Length: 342
Image (tube, rainbow, N blue to C red; front, top):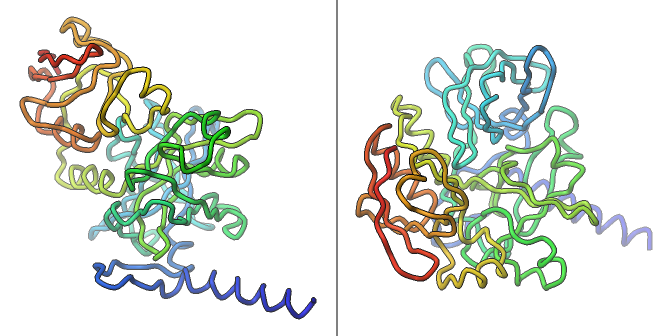
């Protein structure tokens, strides 16, 4: 029995090492860069969000781009307090960092620091389409303390083959997991301090990052569901930053992904689509237009938008105070166009 246990342990260790060193590529797939254990440790650190010297939050972050002078790091904790973030910690190295830009819609903040002070591998992102239904992913968090105890392997359940956010926890607990719309479970002991870590698929490609936007907690079991920011969305925002083009119109709407709604909520709204963006609240100038909650946005200035990423990308084409034509499907099934000042 002892020999059998040793053999099993060695096999598991070999699997663990192979993931970090030379991940295999499926036949016919485009080959993306994979990363060693040391690369991940070097590229991933954490930042502290502080005001008046009081630490309010610790968020995992990682290096996503470098130019001749700066390294750029991504984090998920995007609020009006993002400007208070002044320090990043990579191993024993403490760095002064500067907020470059943030977008609350996709829950992403990007900071930069002088790369001459700390030079590390960039975790380049593959397409988020490489995150497959039912596939196990690897997520890194809490690197500032003990990386070995901060790694989480979790299955991805997604009918749309994308990694997206919350669903009805109670519903998922009472049904088979594959009935859940979109789900990723993170150990609750880790999640409080580990938002923002990179997500790897089974082949070692970075396909997104964990964020803390709209967590849904199952208080009875201590599990938490967290939103995932897709690598495609991260790249769109990063390209805007590098072009110094972050201005965009604000519709004055709180929106959510349809696929993030519980199945019961979708049935209640009689939605016959499982992708798109739905309005959860109306504020500012949008309230004057007549647009309402639970309406599904279908077009922006005549351009069809089917995903949150497409909607955000479209809004970057327009400046503040621009009149935006928003076409939406109302709760009675009819479609109407509204004019909103951005």
